[in-house]
Length: 188
Image (cartoon, rainbow, N blue to C red; front, side, top):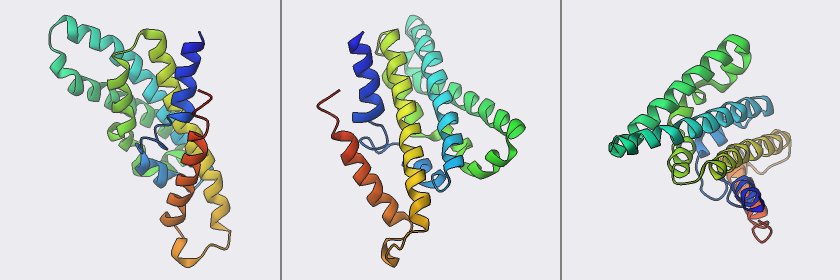
Protein backbone atom coordinates (compact mmCIF):
# COMPACT_ATOMS: atom_id res chain seq x y z
CA UNK A 1 0.00 0.00 0.00
CA UNK A 2 2.80 2.44 0.81
CA UNK A 3 4.30 1.63 -2.60
CA UNK A 4 1.11 2.85 -4.30
CA UNK A 5 1.13 5.98 -2.15
CA UNK A 6 4.77 6.60 -3.12
CA UNK A 7 3.95 6.27 -6.81
CA UNK A 8 1.07 8.73 -6.43
CA UNK A 9 3.05 11.28 -4.39
CA UNK A 10 6.10 11.04 -6.65
CA UNK A 11 3.94 11.69 -9.74
CA UNK A 12 2.12 14.51 -7.92
CA UNK A 13 5.06 16.35 -6.40
CA UNK A 14 8.66 15.17 -6.75
CA UNK A 15 8.45 13.96 -10.35
CA UNK A 16 5.83 16.51 -11.36
CA UNK A 17 5.38 16.22 -15.11
CA UNK A 18 5.46 19.97 -15.70
CA UNK A 19 8.24 20.94 -13.32
CA UNK A 20 10.65 18.06 -13.87
CA UNK A 21 9.71 16.78 -17.31
CA UNK A 22 8.77 20.16 -18.79
CA UNK A 23 5.84 18.54 -20.57
CA UNK A 24 2.65 20.50 -21.12
CA UNK A 25 4.41 23.86 -20.90
CA UNK A 26 2.39 25.35 -23.77
CA UNK A 27 -0.98 25.05 -22.01
CA UNK A 28 0.69 25.71 -18.65
CA UNK A 29 1.88 29.14 -19.80
CA UNK A 30 -1.07 29.88 -22.07
CA UNK A 31 -3.96 29.16 -19.72
CA UNK A 32 -2.47 30.22 -16.40
CA UNK A 33 -3.19 33.94 -16.73
CA UNK A 34 -6.49 33.52 -14.83
CA UNK A 35 -7.19 31.11 -11.99
CA UNK A 36 -10.65 30.21 -13.33
CA UNK A 37 -9.17 29.18 -16.68
CA UNK A 38 -6.44 27.15 -15.03
CA UNK A 39 -8.96 25.27 -12.88
CA UNK A 40 -11.02 24.45 -15.97
CA UNK A 41 -7.95 23.25 -17.84
CA UNK A 42 -6.84 21.27 -14.81
CA UNK A 43 -10.16 19.46 -14.58
CA UNK A 44 -10.25 18.84 -18.33
CA UNK A 45 -6.72 17.48 -18.47
CA UNK A 46 -7.22 15.37 -15.34
CA UNK A 47 -10.31 13.75 -16.84
CA UNK A 48 -8.62 13.10 -20.20
CA UNK A 49 -5.41 11.73 -18.68
CA UNK A 50 -7.21 9.43 -16.26
CA UNK A 51 -9.79 8.10 -18.72
CA UNK A 52 -7.25 7.75 -21.55
CA UNK A 53 -4.91 5.85 -19.23
CA UNK A 54 -7.59 3.38 -18.17
CA UNK A 55 -8.91 2.86 -21.70
CA UNK A 56 -5.45 2.60 -23.26
CA UNK A 57 -4.31 0.19 -20.55
CA UNK A 58 -6.97 -2.30 -21.60
CA UNK A 59 -6.68 -1.42 -25.29
CA UNK A 60 -2.99 -2.29 -25.13
CA UNK A 61 -3.90 -5.77 -23.88
CA UNK A 62 -6.03 -6.24 -26.99
CA UNK A 63 -3.26 -4.92 -29.24
CA UNK A 64 -0.69 -7.26 -27.69
CA UNK A 65 -3.06 -10.24 -27.91
CA UNK A 66 -3.68 -9.45 -31.60
CA UNK A 67 0.06 -9.02 -32.13
CA UNK A 68 -0.40 -5.47 -33.47
CA UNK A 69 1.23 -3.46 -30.70
CA UNK A 70 2.91 -1.34 -33.39
CA UNK A 71 -0.51 0.38 -33.70
CA UNK A 72 -0.30 1.52 -30.07
CA UNK A 73 0.45 5.20 -30.73
CA UNK A 74 -2.23 5.57 -33.40
CA UNK A 75 -4.87 3.87 -31.26
CA UNK A 76 -3.92 5.87 -28.19
CA UNK A 77 -4.17 9.16 -30.08
CA UNK A 78 -7.63 8.18 -31.35
CA UNK A 79 -8.76 7.47 -27.79
CA UNK A 80 -7.29 10.76 -26.56
CA UNK A 81 -8.85 12.75 -29.41
CA UNK A 82 -12.26 11.20 -28.72
CA UNK A 83 -12.06 12.05 -25.03
CA UNK A 84 -10.99 15.62 -25.80
CA UNK A 85 -13.93 16.04 -28.17
CA UNK A 86 -16.26 14.82 -25.41
CA UNK A 87 -14.75 17.28 -22.91
CA UNK A 88 -14.91 20.11 -25.42
CA UNK A 89 -18.60 19.50 -26.16
CA UNK A 90 -19.37 19.18 -22.44
CA UNK A 91 -17.63 22.44 -21.53
CA UNK A 92 -19.15 24.27 -24.51
CA UNK A 93 -22.65 23.22 -23.44
CA UNK A 94 -22.38 23.73 -19.68
CA UNK A 95 -19.83 26.54 -19.36
CA UNK A 96 -19.58 28.71 -22.47
CA UNK A 97 -17.46 31.32 -20.66
CA UNK A 98 -14.89 28.69 -19.67
CA UNK A 99 -14.98 27.30 -23.20
CA UNK A 100 -14.20 30.76 -24.54
CA UNK A 101 -11.45 31.44 -21.99
CA UNK A 102 -9.66 28.15 -22.73
CA UNK A 103 -9.74 28.94 -26.43
CA UNK A 104 -7.40 26.93 -28.61
CA UNK A 105 -5.80 25.22 -25.61
CA UNK A 106 -8.84 23.00 -25.02
CA UNK A 107 -8.69 21.10 -28.33
CA UNK A 108 -4.91 21.12 -28.03
CA UNK A 109 -5.19 18.69 -25.11
CA UNK A 110 -5.21 16.09 -27.89
CA UNK A 111 -1.63 17.01 -28.74
CA UNK A 112 -0.59 17.73 -25.15
CA UNK A 113 2.47 15.60 -24.63
CA UNK A 114 1.46 14.84 -21.03
CA UNK A 115 -1.53 12.79 -22.13
CA UNK A 116 0.33 10.64 -24.65
CA UNK A 117 3.34 10.30 -22.34
CA UNK A 118 1.22 9.00 -19.47
CA UNK A 119 -0.75 6.59 -21.65
CA UNK A 120 2.51 5.18 -23.04
CA UNK A 121 3.99 4.82 -19.54
CA UNK A 122 1.04 3.14 -17.83
CA UNK A 123 0.75 0.16 -20.17
CA UNK A 124 3.85 -1.32 -18.53
CA UNK A 125 2.46 -1.04 -14.97
CA UNK A 126 0.07 -3.17 -13.00
CA UNK A 127 -3.47 -1.81 -12.78
CA UNK A 128 -3.34 -0.28 -9.29
CA UNK A 129 0.00 1.46 -9.91
CA UNK A 130 -1.38 2.67 -13.24
CA UNK A 131 -4.32 4.32 -11.47
CA UNK A 132 -2.00 5.91 -8.87
CA UNK A 133 0.43 7.16 -11.52
CA UNK A 134 -2.25 8.50 -13.88
CA UNK A 135 -4.09 10.31 -11.08
CA UNK A 136 -0.87 11.60 -9.54
CA UNK A 137 0.40 12.96 -12.84
CA UNK A 138 -2.90 14.57 -13.79
CA UNK A 139 -3.47 16.08 -10.36
CA UNK A 140 0.16 17.22 -10.35
CA UNK A 141 -0.52 19.22 -13.50
CA UNK A 142 -3.69 20.58 -11.90
CA UNK A 143 -1.84 21.55 -8.71
CA UNK A 144 1.01 23.27 -10.50
CA UNK A 145 -1.13 25.21 -12.97
CA UNK A 146 -3.42 26.34 -10.15
CA UNK A 147 -0.56 27.50 -7.93
CA UNK A 148 1.13 29.16 -10.88
CA UNK A 149 -2.05 30.97 -11.95
CA UNK A 150 -2.55 32.43 -8.47
CA UNK A 151 1.05 33.65 -8.44
CA UNK A 152 0.70 35.00 -11.96
CA UNK A 153 -2.43 37.00 -11.04
CA UNK A 154 -0.47 38.62 -8.19
CA UNK A 155 2.47 39.32 -10.48
CA UNK A 156 0.25 41.22 -12.91
CA UNK A 157 -0.28 43.91 -10.28
CA UNK A 158 3.24 43.73 -8.80
CA UNK A 159 5.99 46.19 -9.70
CA UNK A 160 8.08 43.91 -11.92
CA UNK A 161 10.98 45.27 -13.98
CA UNK A 162 10.09 45.83 -17.63
CA UNK A 163 12.50 43.16 -18.88
CA UNK A 164 10.94 40.54 -16.63
CA UNK A 165 7.27 41.14 -17.48
CA UNK A 166 5.29 38.38 -19.16
CA UNK A 167 6.91 35.08 -20.06
CA UNK A 168 10.28 35.90 -18.50
CA UNK A 169 8.91 36.19 -14.96
CA UNK A 170 6.62 33.22 -15.62
CA UNK A 171 9.60 31.02 -16.45
CA UNK A 172 11.52 32.26 -13.42
CA UNK A 173 8.59 31.47 -11.14
CA UNK A 174 8.31 28.04 -12.76
CA UNK A 175 12.00 27.38 -12.08
CA UNK A 176 11.59 28.36 -8.43
CA UNK A 177 8.51 26.13 -8.14
CA UNK A 178 10.49 23.25 -9.69
CA UNK A 179 13.20 23.64 -7.08
CA UNK A 180 10.63 23.75 -4.29
CA UNK A 181 8.79 20.65 -5.52
CA UNK A 182 11.94 18.60 -6.05
CA UNK A 183 13.05 19.54 -2.55
CA UNK A 184 10.54 16.94 -1.35
CA UNK A 185 12.36 14.14 -3.20
CA UNK A 186 13.84 12.69 -0.01
CA UNK A 187 10.35 12.16 1.39
CA UNK A 188 8.70 10.29 -1.50
